[in-house]
Length: 166
Image 1 (cartoon, rainbow, N blue to C red):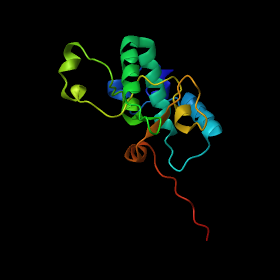
Image 2 (cartoon, helix red, strand yellow; image 1 turned 60 degrees about the horizontal axis):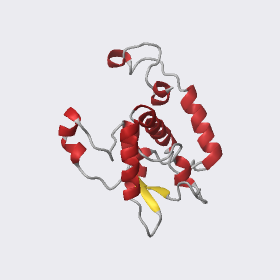
Image 3 (tube, one colour; image 1 turned 90 degrees about the horizontal axis):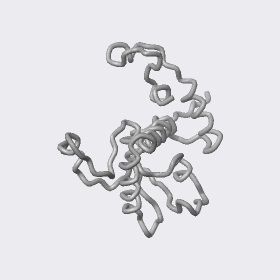
């Protein structure tokens, strides 16, 4: 399922040599996109594919590396803006698989970017976190709105152009 969402080949093909040319199964991604359109409506920028990939990466970390995900949850709550009741989120990095908010050990801890303190969270947010981005009424179990910076929104999706009638 994760490979289908990411657009990788899922039938045993090697990803190094023929991942770019192999036929990709986009049925699951298109199904999730239709769900997002039904829940949140059409937006000026189509950021939903990036949000879907970010949600699946968050779920992957929750299922496989639960201890790091819990550490990242504590980091998420440390970023709460008390005036706006919001938390800054970086779904672009999360969709690419670049995460933060936890202590790295071993060879991964020697990477320079890993030690940099960031002001935005990636993993550690609740499952299906997109509802906290677009929700008007926030639930009691997670009463914070997730915000995405404008420069990240520009990276996420292309702006839809209106057709001019002649």
